[in-house]
Amino acid sequence: MYKRIAALILTIATLKAQAQTEADAVKATVNQLFEGMRKSDTALLKAAFTPQAILQTIAKPKAGGTQVRTDEVAAFIKSVGQPHAEVYDERISFGQVLIDGDMASVWTPYKFYVGEKFSHCGVNSFQLVKLEGKWKIQYLIDTRRREGCE
Image 1 (cartoon, rainbow, N blue to C red):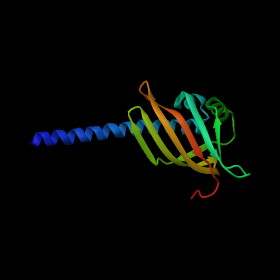
Image 2 (image 1 turned 90 degrees about the vertical axis):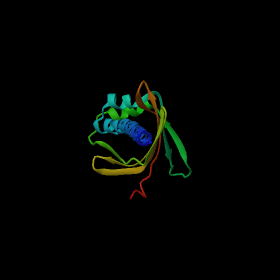
Image 3 (image 1 turned 30 degrees about the vertical axis):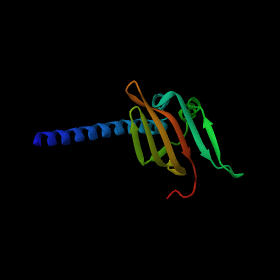
Image 4 (image 1 turned 30 degrees about the horizontal axis):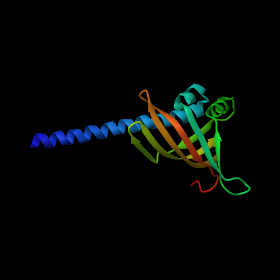
């Protein structure tokens, strides 16, 4: 009887540790994106995405309404990789990481700085897929605003 209870506890602890390891691996991919931005490292940026990745932003034009803008990953990487005087520093916190098999969903509130100057804030919503044993960003959509960024 005690052996069965001990085996059950050990199994639960092992599954929890594996889930934590997967969550850490997902977070590492997301962090790789932002480290690549800070360093203007195009190789690091490119390695964070799948070849078919999609980038979108929910924007509020001055004229009003809401738009969803789609950007090419290659154009984003090229833009971030261009020489610029200030560091692009997106400071995130991990709100939620959900994993089911080879799919993960990550919610990260953020504040974006150019150098030390605040630019905007919002939330990133990532969808990742595990390909050949590595987590990659398949889809990223974000919100952007300059107010309400406490």
